[in-house]
Length: 203
Image (cartoon, rainbow, N blue to C red; front, side):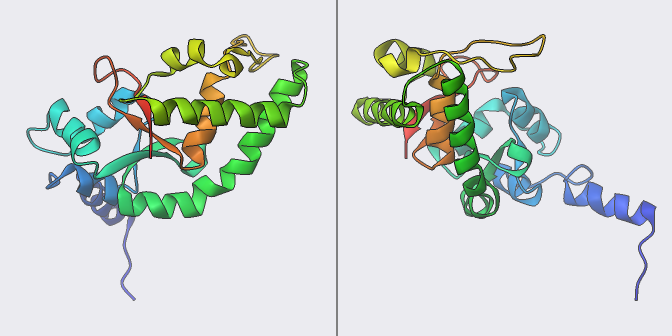
C-alpha cells in the first residue's frame, strides 16, 4: 500500500484546488471544489481569480446569468455555495432538503415570539404571495421591492435577541430563504455591482 506523507497530500490538495495549475473553466473549479463559498458575493469572484488565468467578472456573470450552467444553493454547514447544476442536485439531496423543516420551524418560532397569530398559516400565506408576485413579474425582483408590495413581508421578527448584533428585519429574507431552499426560486443577476446580492426569480 502506497503511503502519502503530509507534503504529498498538500501538493495533491493544491493541485486539486487549482492553486498550482489553472483550471480550464469556472464550472471545473466549482465542481472540483464541491462548490465555491458564496455567502459574501465577492468571495466567488476572488476564488475564481486565483484559479483561472485571465478571469474577469464578466466570465462568472456569463456562466451564472447567461449560460445558467451554475446556481447558488444552501448546502454544507447551512452555507451558501455556487455549484454546477449536476452537483447542485447532489447538494440539494444531501444537505438542502434536510434544512427545510428546521428552517420553517425556526421562522414560525420567531413569528410566535412576536405574538403573530397562527404563525404557520401566516408564513405560508407570505410564501404564496411572494411566489405569485415573482411569477407575475416580467423580470427578477430585488427583495427591497417585494417588501412594500406584500403586506405579510412587512412583519418584523427579532433575530439574535440576546446578542449585541440583535436586529428586527422584515420577514422578507426569511420567506426568500424558504422559497430558495425549497427549490421555488433562484438568485438572478444583482442590480448593483459584483459586490451586490442578487435578485430573485422563479425556477
